Length: 106
Image (cartoon, rainbow, N blue to C red; front, top):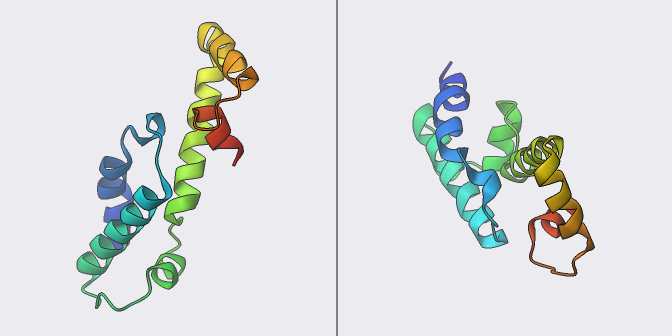
């Protein structure tokens, strides 16, 4: 029940709008730690419990899986619009290693 509250309320607020940001690996690790600490506090579990094992037991997506899913869903929503589709196609041709498209392909 408490894990469901996390999924329904806290995770949605925490991840709101994140698909539009260029997130570094250090940011993902910080987000993972923060998520793990929140879930542990909700469940009353020691902070020494491994977050990965806890997420697997609760059937929660890992932070990286969730991030990739959100980014891909956002890409498909952008691709459905004619204007943003042309913009994405232009970005695919550019050689900028730090843009949104290259981040998706990683």
